[in-house]
Image (tube, rainbow, N blue to C red):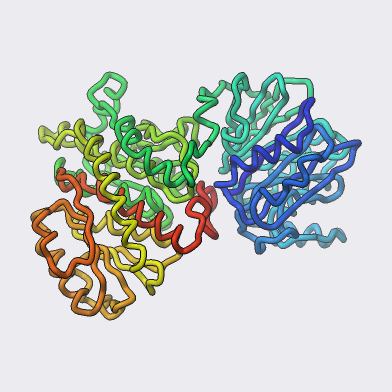
Length: 588
């Protein structure tokens, strides 16, 4: 979840490192640091907090260096625990978790070595420094001792024009152009016209040496040929383009993201997948967070239209629950980044037990894509804000299309998605009405989101958005369950948001509205059932366009996203970078 960047070439490294870290800050922003090599010595600058705290380091001299922006695992956010870490002439930046760090640290301390941080990462510098031979062999020997996950970039005072990189279960890309060699956790840090970019696979190493092309090696240090990644240099440079925050910009991009992400599964490119869909008897959907909610939405659509047994699993629970994977199971693994550690592990387990794996991801060069049998790409474009918005709606577009294809493969049908984009755009415009709701939410004690069926899933997603960027305790709850205990929490400081888009369930959900209103709650309604608007107990509402109820989360999510955004701003929070979180969850 941390961000790594490195450079070796003819230019001063510090400005390149700082610019790269700014573009990777969505991966972690608890602390940041850079190290620059000059004259066989390292100059290191580290700060607690955001990358902008390193601005004074921009003038450092030196043409080789590494930088890091941290999401804390071992050790609190502090300057002491910030990367890079140094020991014995070795400098290391690390993303991942060293699960056996305590045991390795004990070995190092038994040799008389001392540690200057509380992190698991510092032990890597000690392990590399203890090895003999050139830097590549030393890094490989150290990596063999590590249990867990890592992406590392290593410098040595004895080889000041070289960076050695290694990867296991954490992403790392290498760039190469006339202006030098680069390494980073993700393309945005090194995207530029004319640069060739390559990705490291698990167990691989790279050597970046000034004046030469990057060299790649497998776990046995045999040379590996790499294929370039195709990428759009302009798209991979994140810009707000006039919006105050990335989150608001990305919500505005939802309609286009949806339109681009609806696949035509009748085309020849998907013929092999369609054959598998015809044979599929069980569907397992594995995902985390917002992606899990999109999986729940797909489950509803598949059961309604295809009448196929489907279940959505939280990936971290799936991998430890000893799941039963029947014959002819299709596992659908959903991850915006394609690097979500628990989702990768769950998909691998499903595959090991005989399932075919279909990846739904927004990153075409990701680990999830490489390990899957089939890929349904979402085409949301790069998403920078930590809270997923357009990627959620793009996932829904792809997953609803898949549900329709499953229905067709069984001689059934699902409503077409072709006309959904203008409805999504209309929902986004209507959703701006939530801005007037702020007086009820800014000082709230907690918030409940209620719904039934697909509306319940939308309620859960709305709750997740609100708590992750506004820090308000909230819960998405099935409307019919409220009276079984949870109603005790509702009072005048507990606003309630009810999502009602299925006419068949509207009266049932409105019963819950009556119950919370009677306990003093202000009630806010998101609906496309116009009859519900006449309820005198509603404080304010958003009227959405009508659509197929199973597809309604694609519309109701827009006002819910906007509600979270405006509440976060009203409470003085940065909606792009909520505390304690990061965008790409590459650790357990």
